[in-house]
Amino acid sequence: MALTDDYYAVVEAGGTKFICAIIDKDRNIHAQVRIATTSPDETLARVIDFFQTHIAAGYIFKRLGIASFGPLDLNRTSATFGSITKTPKSSWINTPLARRLSQALACQVAVDTDVNAAALAEYKWGAAQGASVAIYITVGTGVGGGVVIDGKPLHGVVHPEIGHMLVVAPAGQKGICPFHQDCVEGLASGPALEKIWGQPSDTLPDDHEGWGSLADVMAQMCHNLMVCYSAQKIIIGGGVMQRTGLIEKIIVKCERSLHEYIMFPDNLSLANIICAPGLGTYSGLLGALALIDHQSA
Image (tube, rainbow, N blue to C red; front, side, top):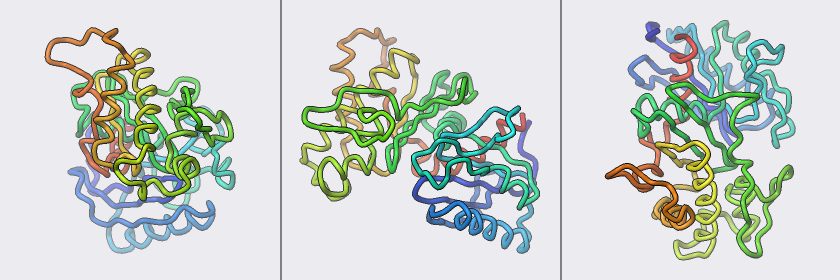
């Protein structure tokens, strides 16, 4: 089912910020705002105010797409469908995100994890077009991963939690995840890097050993994704990944780890598979739009 309405409301709900926008079916953004993620009541009140203001200005929409940090309850038969569940952001646990916005704005809501949504957007419009198995990873305040198989986001019991994949910590390092410690998120997220190295990751010089250690962790993750999913695209975005040359380091280390075990088709290598987002910093926001189309089909 194609998008037919004039405007859509979209929210990329992150652990640090909510980005809200009014967008049309051609992916043109007509209004946008960034809202700091504070308490649920304060944050959602500002989200609702943004959309109500633009409804009053003539940007009428019937559907809202939410690409949210998680974990989320995505069981459509559940009384808490669309709620944030056991997140490390304790004040957001059990927040009925989809229901509160749907009721306040009198619209239908499509919801999924921010990374499943980003993977879907990259599949539809970005670097994963034509890929039967596409994975999107974001590395920022946390580490999350979404999977799209044959154009459908993967759910299962809940949804992928790739950021909590266990890996071997680099020598002398200890992860910060309160649930699993030495998982990808506990070792590679922005807060983890700051804890490990004693300063924010964006202040580390290009030749700092922290980037090599980060590439080790991410290469282990990519190794596991390749042998588990036979991924055709592993797209890695997020604020931490903005460092020049980091993806190339990950590719080299992952190639070394796989040790030529995977026989790639001619003219294909990890350098074709592991890449930056084709949609730049808009994968998540456009992912919320992609969810509307996908869940209306």
